[in-house]
Image (cartoon, rainbow, N blue to C red; front, top):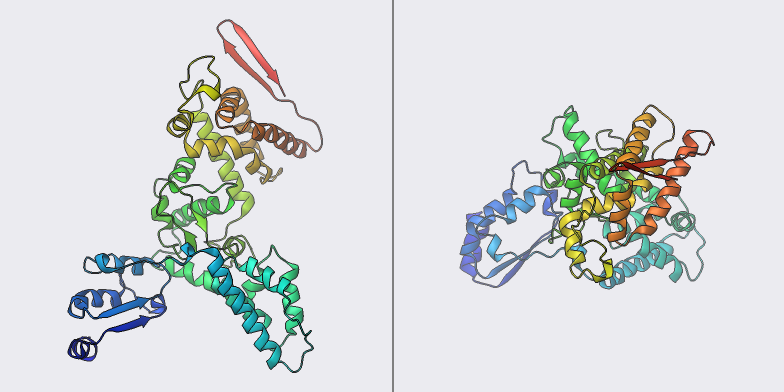
Length: 411
């Protein structure tokens, strides 16, 4: 480093920009990137040099940039923070250029003069959703020399909600490499760790409204959410603000993990019915534990419209995790099979909910302005029970004892 790199640059005293592309592709077993570790030792000796480094945010790369001598002089640009219109413009240009060049190069195929049409390019750009590697995989799929590009483009366009073809073209291999690298130091038979991974990632992928890490922790009773996911910065968006939700970079990642023919490693496979049931039981358990009469300690007979600090009360006494459980638990029930060995466990948990939590649940829905969700929930529950009982209607009866009187509500 000194002889080949540092000393010549110090002697030249020229202002230079050095680009290191795809640093994550370096084979590196150290906790922090060796390249960054070495740079951290000498960066103070070459003040006229700037580095432009691109990489997936792998743990060892992020650890390298946290080194004491690098952190103060490093500016991080996250591509997912770039304005969508700018990214889309680049991706459209990429599609138009690559497909136009393909049409010129393939004399064995018949192309329309306007191929690809602006409509086709718009759909491809929408499916890419800002992920350039997806766009690259699409071009690779369409440009296969063993297939007709027009037909291959039609396949992609005809399935706007699917990423199956792109997966076959290479993006599945990319996701496999990311996951294997993230867990390379973990024994393959560590069932508890992989079960925790599936629970957390399955919840991130299947929740009907994205949740912050703290809310996920509350819902799943798992304190180590960040630890479980810390190696997945390449495929999940971790916001700087802890109040903001975790999100996936691109739809192709959940499609991959939840596709039994695509995710071949059973350690990482997310089976939606299994995880909908896990989330459902977590929601019911959380509501059983936390719901209570007058949960926000509001004055009796005070209209919600007159409670000045209602959002603050919601945040303090209800929180994102419980709010989510109240609003969406029945939607997860819809995703649970109505037959099988776990049906009895689900029924028992729901019976307990109606016995102990119904009115308190309605109260939270009212406070959070989600009473409409309760109406739809009752319908979803009824339909699920009908499928369990093979068409027989089901009646729920809620009974509450207060003093010497008994109040009942039949649904």
